[in-house]
Image (tube, rainbow, N blue to C red):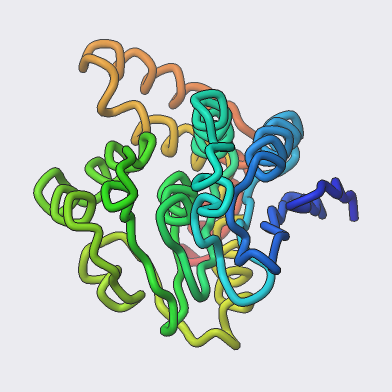
Length: 257
């Protein structure tokens, strides 16, 4: 296993699977200066490893991430530069070619939910507590409201972001924010099961499908059409597609006998 150990988080790489573990449990994985710098370092590290196809993002200890460090915020340490670094790290996570899964337990508040929203899929425990309460702190939730609106629509996103109400994992499923809910004891097993399912699917197709969905809000139809055809050509030429088609032809031959 290849490991990158940072002050507030850890990256573990094994085969095609990556693990990004938020590792500041004594502060419920709250984001201070070291944390946002580590997120930039970690996402850059993951982006440079083309063998990683799936990344599970999780929090060590009792919480996924309780948001920005209120103690440092109240002392005026979280500056304009901090927020720019924060968004650089979160955007780096969102832009990974790998498919990302947020495995959420305990508190997933503010910036913690923003990190989860930057992932492609989200699993939460039954005891998870989620919210995006930046306005109550007199702040904008970085680009979290935009990501949330793209996932669940403008109306529900405004309700959550303007009121800052907390909600459970089950409520998150109803809101279409959370994909699966499980017990805390089964969270890692559930996340690994989803990762294994994704790893069984041709990655070239997954990668381009993710990119196509992510860019659907940014590009005109003609550009999307051109990119789709180029992506499809790469998929058709990929060894994964050829292997799947070979198995299909074998099954077809067998069924015809």
